[in-house]
Length: 399
Ligand code: 5AD
Ligand code: SF4
Image (tube, rainbow, N blue to C red; front, side, top):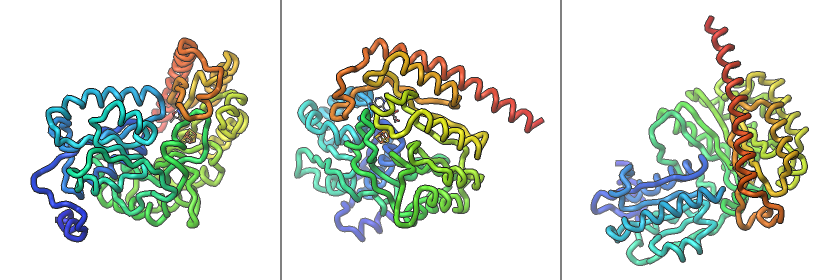
């Protein structure tokens, strides 16, 4: 009923003649999951229904990631596989959206001309227009980045579950030298507190009890109405939310007030994902990470002083250009000192267009692999210890 009403109110939306189905495959980070839900809501408005069966879909969108070479390879392989489907179903609309679309549109158009649509992360509003004018065009490409697009007025079509992802800001201005995100997602911009709260209230009414606030740099959130701590405090006061999480923050933008807000509200989870990236000051500087090992360790102490049982996780890159054995050992030492509960560990992957890709002292694949294995082994032991500590503590509570 509601959808028909919306079609009547908006003449640009086409009335479907037969049931049409869409399939979205999402790669990469949680922001992409959220964006796929936004794309889903736009397709619903065009009269399309979701399907889990890719073969029966009339429109397929791959929401892509460009953060490491491996992520791009996976999408290339998927697109190669989809060519045969496209051959037997010429009416099928095949779209590549997200970071890789932004980054590699020319390559994609040249190597895979059967792709119909390429849209960057700020161009999803074009989807209804593309669907409605489909017959009149061959390729539709829009990868313009916007300084303002935050999809403030849209409500994502969420899958069932307990957790609702809520994007609060988009883009990144940090320009870590290894990272493609500032190029694929553009400049930092924040949604208003009111619109975020409106979305959260609606999600809670729909039955979601866990809210995860999302942003490429979630705690750089800043509006005239307040900063990230203000927002978190206001979201925590919304009735019916059992758990609030946020990801991913930058250590530079974490302050004592944020930790105190986390400590004050029992529905804000005691977990901070604190990406370290490297334990060596020289490498951190080369990465443009804007903090030192000491600052990072001081931050960990401050967090644990206020929230002693705060779960800490991290991201780390091994084999960044120029990383020596002793600099890698410094990362191992920081891991031992902090004792993260868990960690996402990556081998450095050179991303064309980033500053680090131009450094001349890249590390061999063999060395990167060995360092990664060493770090994974260390973290496995640390995670086990931390889990045992939590288990013992919980047993005491029950006993
Ligand atoms: N190579 C390897 N890992 C990377 N990350 C970002 N860019 C790269 C890269 N070029 C990692 C960082 C970041 C996480 C999301 O992905 O650790 O925090
Ligand atoms: Fe990439 Fe650094 Fe921005 Fe994170 S803070 S998205 S690693 S540039």
